[in-house]
Each structure stands twice: as C-alpha cells, then as structure tokens.
Image 1: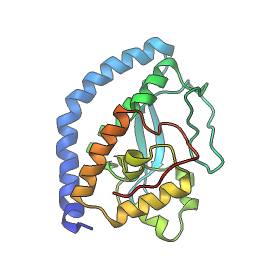
Image 2: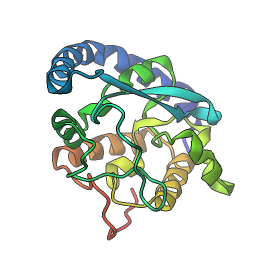
Image 3: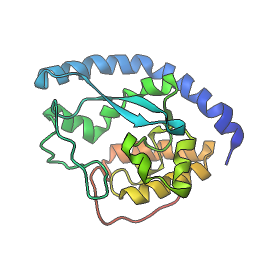
Length: 206
C-alpha cells in the first residue's frame, strides 16, 4: 500500500484531471441531454444516494438511462439487475449503459471530493448491513467511477465476490494499480465485456 499516494497524490490527480475533463463533460451534457429529452422528455440526470467514504451519504450523478419512476429490481444477492432487454431502459438508456457514458457525470462527484476516478463502486445506503469484518474496509477510501471490479469483472460477479475484490483493492492501493485499472477499464468498455450478470466467471488478480 502506497500511503503517500493515498494521502496526497491520489486526491491531487483527481482534482487536476476532473478540471481538465470538465469542458468535455459539458459538451457531452449538451449532446446527451438533448438526446434524452428527445427520447422521452424526462430529466437528464439521475441522482441517487450512495455510501461514500466513512459511510457518509452523497448524491451520485448519472445520465438517466431508465424510464421515469422505473421500479427498483434486484438480483437474488441484492445487486442491481442488469440485462440487455431490461424493459426499464429507454432507447437512449440502452446506448448509455452499453458505452458506460451514463457514468461520466460522476466527474462532478470527483471534483467535489465525494468520489475518486479509481476506487470501489459506491453501494446503496442499505448495503451497510452487508458489511462485516474486513468488508467494512471498503468505506475507508473514496468510491470510484471505475475500480477493480468494474475493470476486470464489471457486472459478471455476485455481490459477495465484489466485496472481496473491494477489500483486495483497499489493501493494495498504489499508483501502479490505479493505472492498470484505468487502462483495463478502457479495454472493458471498448470491447463491452461483462456488461451483464454472468454466473460463470474466472477470478483474476492484477
């Protein structure tokens, strides 16, 4: 674990790169915002409460991919239901999900300090009851736009396995690890790997 990187440089990089990417975000906001409005006329953003560092709640920004007032559907392990034919998704929402463009507004969360570019994905407030022992370590760091799970597995593993991977990340944070996760995330998004739940998966380690 690289303590100097964790305490100083990780946040420094987050602030610098979020500022650099802000113009790109605003251009995308205009384009995607118009597309969402033309699709169903609903709000552009979805802002849901999530667990942040030390369990503090914050509003996480996403481009809305679901129909207005869509029901909350969960898998048996409590994780979010994901499917290519999910009837809750709008036409534009399907594109946003497959390309992960719906996550880009979280650049604002990074700038505010709610999140980091790389870190464990934030859970819903109700997930706090599932944390026990080492899994609570997940709350010791800022959640990320992408992380170990998203880069290597995305939605192909169950919640229990995701928590183990989150602990692995927290115990081994370093600049090199974050860099590997960053490039692996790009690869996963470009090749659309593990977008939906898959019961068969092979565990990997960096």
